[in-house]
Amino acid sequence: MGNKTVLISVNFLAEIPDDVVDDPEFNELNKLENELADLAEKINSEIKLEWESIQTIVLNPNTMNCGKCESCGRWVSNREANDSIPQLNIAGMHEGKLLCDECLPKNHKLAF
Image: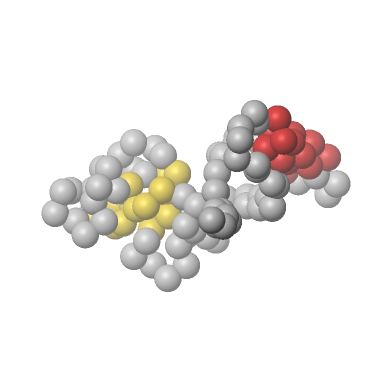
């Protein structure tokens, strides 16, 4: 019996001060990324976890398909648009408002 490789993605949202994000050396961000990667080695499990990659995206609702749900405030990406960010919660437009899948009306195609 063989093994199958499974990609497990975990996404975190972090509120980070502008000066830390704008630091050209990314010292604090790099430290945080390294600590998160080290967590895989510390998990005691019969399943071996191997760090593969980390991606850091600074969210900008003015230039990216992202924003906060206008009802509950969670970060979302409009899945009805071509440039959605799959790591964020599903959202769609309803009556001119960006709403997450849980706040969309039940008859909306993206409602949860």
